[in-house]
Image (tube, rainbow, N blue to C red; front, side):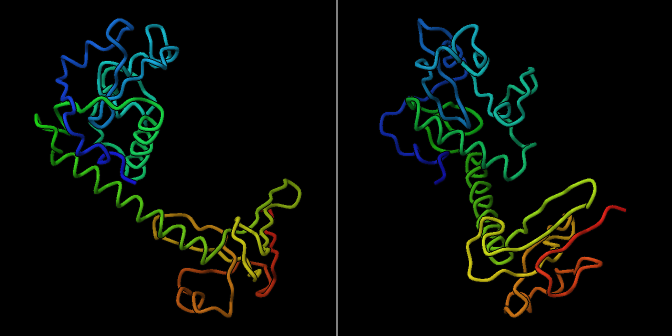
Length: 228
C-alpha cells in the first residue's frame, strides 16, 4: 500500500502551515511531527518525542530526510528527499505506515507535498510514483530470487568459501536442488551465488548471466572456492 496517499480524501482535515506546526513541540500544545507532508500527533510517545527525548527534534517540523540518513544537523532536518534512492523513498513510505498504525493522523502540512487545500503537489505525486517503482523492483527481485534461489554460504579461513545448494537454500522451498553458479543480475552489480536447475527453461533463457565457479565440477551441488 502507498501510505503517502492513504489519507488523501480525509474530509475536514486540517492543513497546517510551517509556523503552526512549529507550535507543537511541547506537552501543553501537543507533540506533532510531519513526514512527507502528513502530520501525526505523537504525544503518547512523549518519552521519545517530548523535550529531552531522543527524537524531540522531529517534532514541530517535517524532517523526512533524517528518518533515512540518521543525521540530525540543520541540513538534514529537512523535507527535501531528492538525494534519496528509490528504495530509501520506499522506506519513508514504511515510516508513514508505522505512524498511521501507532499514532493519530492530524492533517497535512502546506508546502512541498501538499497545497493549501490539501491536494497533493507535483512533488507528492513524484514520491508516489517512486514508491510504486520500488515495489515493482522488489517484485522483480523476488521473482528472480525464486527463479534462481541464493546458495547456502559458509566461509572458514582454512578452507575458503563453500557454496552449496539444497531444496531449501536461500529460504526458497522447492522440489529440486540445483547447482551453484555465479549470477550476474546487472552489469554494475557484483555476482551472487545462485542455485540453478540446469534442465529448466529459465536456465536456457538466462545462460548469458551465469558463470561456473573455477575448479568446481559442472554438476556438483557443492563448490569450494579456495583462498588464494
